[in-house]
Length: 318
Image (tube, rainbow, N blue to C red; front, side, top):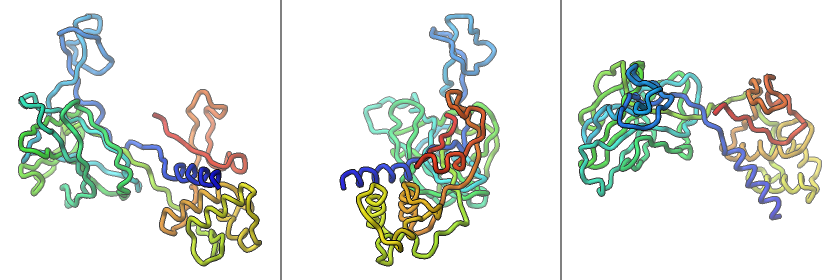
C-alpha cells in the first residue's frame, strides 16, 4: 500500500509539474558603461565602453519610471494561444532617495485583463519584497489564471507604503505599449508606445483535444463516480496486487489503447484534477536540440515512444 501511495504521489507531481514558456520578455534593462573599475561583461553597452580597458565595464543603468504610492505604470502584453500563468520577473529597484532602508518596502504586482486598451479587471496580485536587489521573480502557478488566446493583458507594479519609492527600470528598446496612472490605478491614461518597464511573463500553453473517454470509463470500482479510490485500485492492479473484473478492466483502459498501465493512471488523475473533463496528451512533433541525445536533430513526439516507456516529459530550451 505504501508503494502504491508513493507511485500515486509521483504521478500527481508529474501531472502538476510543468515547464515554463516565455510569453512576454522585454529582455534585460538598459546597460551602460562605467569607468570605476570592474570586469567588462557581454551585455550591450554604448560605444564608449572599451572591452580592452580594464577600467571599463558594463553596468545596469539605474534609471526608469518613478513608482510611488500614486504613480505607476502597466506594461501591455498579448497571447496568441491559451496559456496558464506560471511566473513573472520584474526589474524594480529601491529609489536612491530612500534613506531609511530598515523600514518594510514591498510592492504588489498585478495582472490585469484588458479593458478598451487599458488595464482592467485584476486577475491576480502578489506581494514581493523590494528592499534589496533589482530583479524580482515569483512563481504564481498555484493561482490557475488562464490567459485566453487572441487577448491582451497588462502587468502593473504598485508600492504598498507611502514611504516606499521605486524605479521600474527602463527597457533597452522602445517597442512596448504601456499606460500610466497618477492615482494608483483608479484611472489609466491612454496607452503609449516606446520604452516601458522591464519585465517578463512565463506561462504554459494549454492543449485541447476532442477525444472523450467511453461511458463509465475510469470508474474502476463501478460505484458510479470517479475519484481517488479508483486511482488507488488501478495502481494496485498495475502493481499486480489486485485482480479486477472484466467490466472494471474495460473502465481501467482509460486511453483505449488495449493496454492497462501507468498511462491510464496519469490520465485518470488528470481527469479528477480537471473536474471530470477528460484531457489526453496532444500529438505533436518537435526537433530534439539536445546534442547529447540519441535523437539529436530528429523530430520526435509522444508517438515515437508509444508502448516503449510509461511516462514522458518534453522540456523546452532553457
